[in-house]
Amino acid sequence: MTVRVPGFDSFRELFDSDPYFSRVIAAARTGENSEFLLVDGFLFRGNQLCIPDCSLRLQIIKESHGEGHVGRDRTLQLVKGSYFWPTIQKEVEKYVARCWICQLSKGKATNAGLYMPLPIPTQPWTDLSMDFVLGLPRTQRGVDSIYVIVDRFSKMAHFVPCKKTTDAVKVAQLFFREVYRLHGLPTSIVFDRDTRFLSHFWRSLWKMVNTRLDFSSAYHPQTDGQTEVVNRALGDLLRCLQTFHQKSVLFPSSDILTWINRYSPSRDCLVSLDLSNNNLIGSVPSTIGGLINLEELDLSNNKLGGPIPIGISDSSMLRNMKLSNNSLSGSIPIEIEKLL
Image (cartoon, rainbow, N blue to C red; front, side):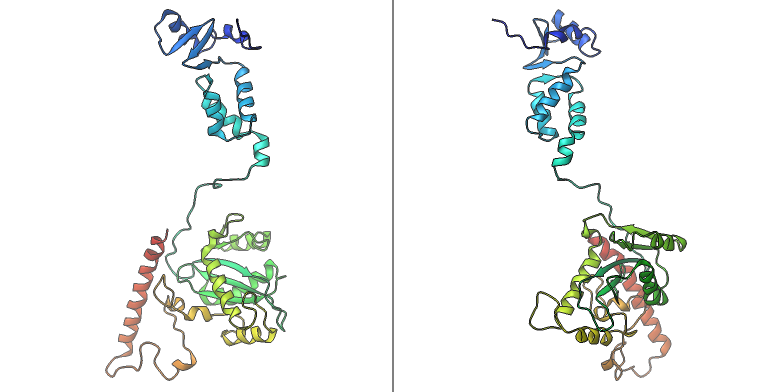
């Protein structure tokens, strides 16, 4: 009994015109190629039926992939289990990648692209990151959000109270008032894809001053993980101001206003987190670059190390400060690189 499959009889004549199988079938007829076997005009490679260059190849891939719309590797395994042609892997990959049903129905299980780590900064306040903390209780001044600016080198941060409705123009004014006047212009800024940061005004402004804008990947806050950590620490501090509802910031508006004013030399910029030691740099962030924080208790004592010893000149003290600052500035990029 002979089994006849519709469509398979038509391609037996195509072997002689196929660029690859024409040589293979000629060698199989003379017995020179033992890898291939010719049976009733059909060419086999082991248990695989050889398919010449014709539309039947696409039909085989389509039916094999359509059984369950499996991935590239499993579709290739199904096709190669019964068929063979030289470009089978390339054609299967091309078909699966263009399957519109898979594109609509399946999520992304792999990364969108290669990881691109942020460049390591070399000095304070040249490479910054920005973000907003939203959803806070409204104060008497109408403030309900905090604009966070972090120096990626020293980890020093500025916290500027603002409103949720603050637009790109107002954000720029806050930056130049609270950061630029103290530290100058940065060379690069990292932030998420907030509409304020994507606006034409914001892009044009920083293009004029030659500052590079680095946007994080969509739905991937880990890109700017440093600012996210600072935001979490800020949230913890705010929660400590109230007693009963520890999972949410629910305290009278007067309390947050008092807290903002208490820790703000400019009555707008929070600097309380900069007074604590950072484990990465091994120092207080705001001391990087020669800045020294003086608090009320330090007025009666020398912040540089207690009372000034007798016989130590001012020039010697300044020399020691410079050596200490150079040591910190040199070690910070090394510590950051260890984390990458």
